[in-house]
Image (tube, rainbow, N blue to C red):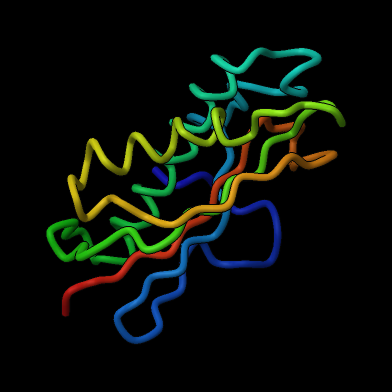
Length: 139
């Protein structure tokens, strides 16, 4: 299930053939599985695992956007990855690879996407990672 939004926003919005997915953290069944900062409290491997969970939460939201039919997914267009990390942490892309690899596993070539991976000072609930996405859908 998609984690319950913590603010005044929807988990997705469909505009034409694009599904814009709100950022998802590494929350699972109501519990933040990975919290703190990569490079201080957690290592790259934990960040990678956290990003994968973000990706799974994105797919749950995408399933809602597709009205339950993930066969409607034509392409993962873009991922945006945000890594809660130490100020001098050099490897946000290695962390966000956890979500990128999941999209390729699930959607094959349609999972190939452009991406941003940045380090940030804080995330909701002290989440280690947050990822948002844009997908193209078949009608």
